[in-house]
Length: 294
Ligand code: SAH
Image (cartoon, rainbow, N blue to C red):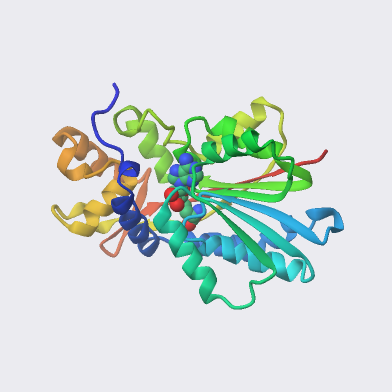
C-alpha cells in the first residue's frame, strides 16, 4: 500500500531539527569519529599513488563535521598534498553551516572547496553534461543513500569516478540495527516510494555481491536514546519519532494502529534495550569500503 503519510525529507527545516536532535540523543557521530580515528588512516594509506594533489568528493555532507574530521586525518597521512574537495549537498542550510565551520577552522588553505548545491543525481547529470574526466581519489557518502531513487545506480556512478587505488566509503545503518527491524516490519507503511528510504549496508552488500564487486566492511556500535518517544505529546519525542519513521508529523498523521505498532516495536528487544528507565535503540552503523583496483 502506498502510504499517504508525507515524507520528512520534504520539509528541510523540520528535517534539520530532527537530525540535530538525533545527533544529540545518539552516539552516531562519536561512533564515526572512532572509526575515522582508528581505521580510516589505514584505508587512506593507499590512495593517490604518490600524487601531490588529491581529489575528494563528499556526497550528502550535511554540516561537514565528519568531512572535516576525515580531511584532518588525510592531512596527517599526507602533510604535503593539496586537496580539491567537492561538496555535493542539496540543502542550502547545511551548506551554509558547512561553510561557517570551515571559516572557523584554521589552516585549511591546502583545501580548495567547491560547493555544489545539488542532489547526487543532479551532480551526476552535471558531470555528464560537462563530460568531466576528472577522477577522484576518495569519495564518501555518509548516511545519504536513503535519499536517492536507485542506490545501486548511484554507487555505480560514483565508483566510475574513482581513480586507480581510489576508495569509495559508504556509511549507512547496519543490517543488524534496530532500523532494519523497524523497516522490515513497516516498510510499506512508512517508506516513501519515490526514493528508497529503507536501505541498510546489508542491501548494498547484496547489490555489490551480485555484481561481484569486492569490498571491505565494518560494523560500528552505536546507540540512540528514544525514551521521550513514549511520552505522549512530548515535543522532542515527536521529533525523534519523525526521524525514526522518516514521516513528517508521524504522531499527528499516522493511524492509531500504525502508531501503536511502531511504538511497540521500538521498545521491543529486537530494536532496543531498556535500562534505568531509559530506552536505548540499536543505531549500529555499517561501513563499506570499495577499492578501485584498475
Ligand atoms: N553526512 C552527514 C549528513 C547526513 S544527513 C553526517 O553523517 O552527519 C543526510 C544528508 O544528505 C543531508 O545533509 C541531506 O541534505 C543530504 N541529502 C538529501 N538528499 C540527497 C540527495 N539526493 N543527494 C545528496 N545528498 C542528499
